[in-house]
Image (cartoon, rainbow, N blue to C red; front, side):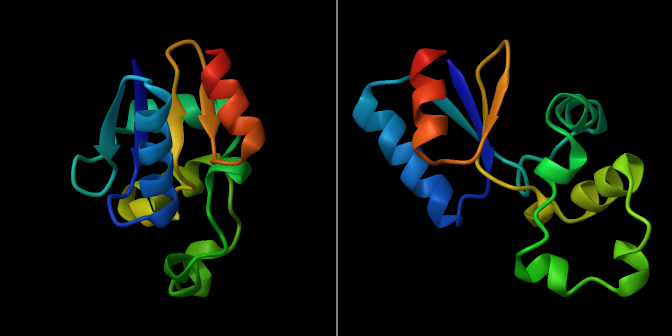
Length: 115
């Protein structure tokens, strides 16, 4: 079963969940804002995908942060920001068990279907 991490109000997450359903793929949705996100899971994702890949610097949450919060970023600081502001995580993130897939474009759809 695929676990999808995201936000329930995110349009891309909604599209991804609809696609999974239409494809007949079993999934569980985990809202990172409502259900939370633990430090160990996030650290594992950062190790696997890189904090630069996981951190959404294009959204309104990022633009609303103080310059002191965004200066001198590294993996530890990015993790603290994502834990404090879950909307800073790029989404959706698909946990396929053995690996994670981030985003929802054709390449990611192919990766998800392939396991």
